Image (cartoon, rainbow, N blue to C red; front, side, top):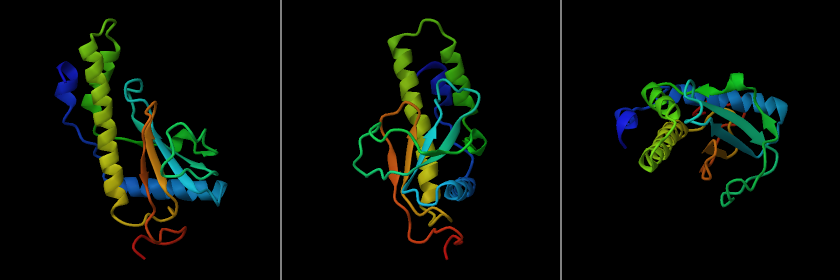
Length: 175
């Protein structure tokens, strides 16, 4: 990567695993109130290149099971969405956000610049997945008893995290 993106590529999200786990538990509880028997959670980051002021992760639930070998986009839309106020705001990517903003303001971008921007989107998503997986791997999240699908806006791939033993609504982590 070159230019603005190369200067920002070493960022890391600073939310921390405790904050991510709290967000997961809060979302699971809210979704359980609206749809007690959902079989899968779905999370999606907003578009990194088009939402340069604030990167967020939204959570939703499906009432239809999504198998581990599902093709992206094959499962339709979510059944139970949470309002955007429940989204997790990702902190620590401000330098990368400024780089995306700068690139978005350029009228004529070379193929190299477009490729750099695409690579940067993957790096941002990978850093979110690293944080999400670290939070998940700390053990059962209270209220999360189903698989979690994680993707990014306009991505055609996803990560699937299987639930830990425990994690039922009302249980404390590690109990």
